[in-house]
Image (cartoon, rainbow, N blue to C red; front, top):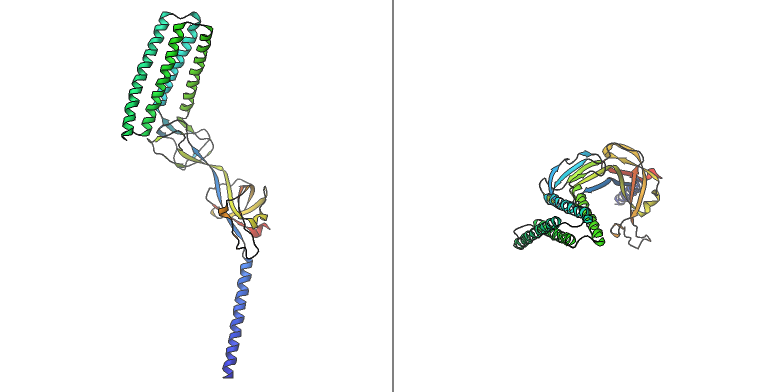
Length: 331
């Protein structure tokens, strides 16, 4: 019996020693484990959009294609804008004609001509008003789209403006040319020219070009679809602006300082010890704060977002690639 107790005691001691040894080995292994932070390569993304509403006519690029600054990306067709351009050009011609002739006095032929233009403007306004009323009714019945309603409303407002301008021109030539009339005529020319320039600026966006060198990542609409003013049409990734983004806990921040360098590995390119330079540090929101239990004497640790640029250009670097930073190597 005593022998059996002795054997149990020895076995207990052996098990206890084994547990202590395993725990010690585990603690040593965990304490020697390096702290590795994982970041990601990101790049500037530009959303291509224009001021001209219309229909996508032609895509001159495809997703994944590399483009250079100034390359034409897409062509937008807007018949309404071109019609408006012709209209404002005609109004500018009228204003220039009146300004040129007003110094010589107003002839009867000019009065009749301007009156005819006014009558035509009134007819156009009446037609636009009737059309707008019909479209409004159809829109309330959900027969036509809001895009079509907006187009007709714009045409109606343009007709109102054209009729007012023609009326003012008629009154001007009818009353004769005084000093104030001459100044008014010159002002009308300037106003008409400004309207032409405004429409020309819109039509410049009929062909959208690349603002930077880069790669087309995503094209949103399909060919033939309508797009509104400011609607994103495609995204352009500027690969020359690739940088690494790291989320670093506050107690690791002593390893990272503004304008300082650190090294990281890029597994996707099988690159070791690539040097990056920090150019941006900013705290993240409260959602990224490490909360303390307040029982161990610790504190709530914030998380900081760090951006760093490659010190030397690297071929093949793409957004989405991982970057591993070993803090033990930064000591």
